[in-house]
Length: 95
Image (cartoon, rainbow, N blue to C red):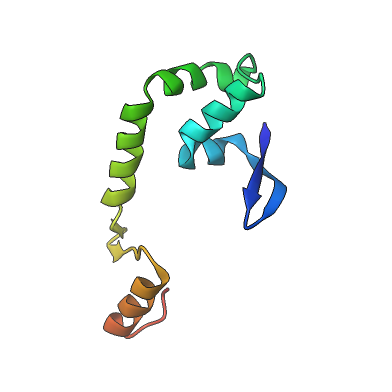
């Protein structure tokens, strides 16, 4: 299942539900509810739970994004500025 998504002023870009659900679970659940998609098999099993548990889901997503500072022993930058700084410190161009 794919859903329309707006990126930089362009509306209608189709993005797989799996990707949107991981990055924007509450917005996808609200979209599904507003557009009568709650009965679809891909949505019915998680969207009602997400809507009921919004505060906990927001806290979990926030803490997950803050925890990912390293991956496979490599520091992950959080911004372009930080990426350039890591390249300068490490003497390479990984980022």
